[in-house]
Length: 339
Image 1 (cartoon, rainbow, N blue to C red):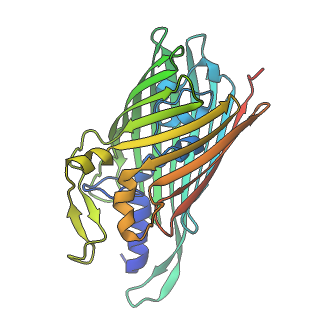
Image 2 (cartoon, rainbow, N blue to C red; image 1 turned 90 degrees about the vertical axis):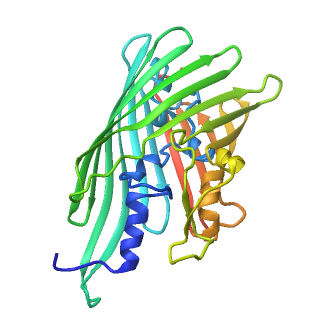
Image 3 (cartoon, helix red, strand yellow; image 1 turned 90 degrees about the horizontal axis):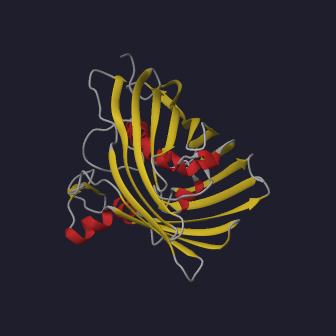
């Protein structure tokens, strides 16, 4: 290799590409798969697998939420994150019959331009880093209240002259009782592996086993969602940036209560009508991992709103991950089959 990257660029590249918003132990690639592409999900803490809505974007984390009621539904989203980092997604769904539906979509994340330097810090040029995903999803009614789904994902990443290709699948199951307005889901996300690695070492995908429930209150216009994440990694060690044992902090383990909260996300929605909502979320895991770096009081919190105007479902959300990392996301769903 005739040149190297300076330490700042290298660390930033690794943070954003290989472990974006995922400060846990173990080598994983394609960490961008954990970033929400739904503005509504982003407002509820970043992960939610139990929302039953006519909003195609919420199916990105649980294919079992896809159904024929989303026929001719178009979803678009865009997020502005740190500096030049941009994320976007699009999807389209169509009904197979009265019991099933298929959706196709794409996602991208562009990390901007980086300076390429020599060993003596001479600038040799610029390079870019990108992640892309193309997916095909199916959801099908198993019975009156149970629905299953699968999402096949084709993933491609290119960082300067290095590239990698992987395939993964999400599997989901959802139970929905419309009379009680209660939803229960379980998903296995990112099952798969690299077909082509960046170098000689193959890295694992960020597999995640999740369980979630959503329950609307019977006498008040509120819905509460609880989502459990990383259930196959209960210890879930992470880097504590507030500890100065060495340059990079130290691996930290929490007590039982903190461990439990690191696996739980909570979201609350205010739903005064069928066409409007306000949402807030809290992600303790995100707060524990990033507050030590100066995130402040609002680290781990998120909020958003959405409104349906005729055939347009427009959403916006904000989430603070770090004092310099507040994300803004907008989303739009075009409901072509809405009467």
